[in-house]
Length: 438
Image 1 (tube, rainbow, N blue to C red):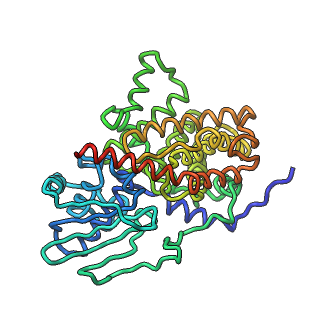
Image 2 (cartoon, one colour):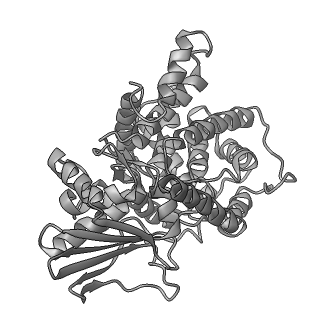
């Protein structure tokens, strides 16, 4: 059998992509994006704002309206905007709200109570967009972020542009990397054969997301699903096996993150939950097989980079829950740790596409931990099937015989087939909010 030729020319691009897309994030990244816009706007204003006007894209509204903002005990985009403007670190990127004081949180809640923070949907083509306009006296500042959570495209003070980014003709910011000339096999070869020093940075994902998992296991955050599952082991309703440990420890990290824990997650593709889903199953399996640091590091890189590679075929935000695609990366990482090669990893991902394609994203909330649990369980099940030589056939549904074709079909489903689904989800959520406030 011929050994595939290594495409080492892609390796620097893979490192760049992993460094760009795997980053610490404190809190759900959609409210954090708005908080960052507000923090930069307040810095530009040069004084504490008296009033805030925030506008966001429909998808950012969907993902931000129901999630707890770390350190505040409150939910939604308006509190994120207020604490960002009053105490956020304008240079903190996805950790803009790190180190919030109680005084800032109290002041932000007063702003909301006095109705000095308004929020509306922006009529923009960008799927991911947040805009902050802050006011103090007759002074104003405006900041716009588009296409990725920290990509500032406009800074204005009193109507004069201080910074304006050059955008592509499509209105989208140029990507820092392009995977059009890469294959899933190239991703696998890089993670398993590139020099270890090129990827050692990915090990921090285990450190950060394990800390979130430990916090979640205390049962104080979100729906405390991980802690509940762990409790049922003692009650005899669940077995203390590898699957249960994968589910409990992965879900506990999501519980903590969505429940407002003031600990950063290592994110993937702009999402903390995606980072957790790509990290924790791999960490648990690595412990189970006694993998050394190199084994864990390579499996983590395979998981995270495969998740990035698959997500690159999807819109930045869509109606398809991207925890599922992150967990496809985890399936590849677990397969590697359990002795499978590229064929096993590919079979597992194909089975997951046959299993999870179409799981909806109905906004960020505590229930995201349920989707994390479902996706982690699907990943492990698919790996076990693949190790036994079984996977969803290329004649079934949207799955193809060739892995990259299956991934392309998943991308088409998310970017074309689920557009109306996305609009309907947002309408349902906005109608609920309107009815609750009536």
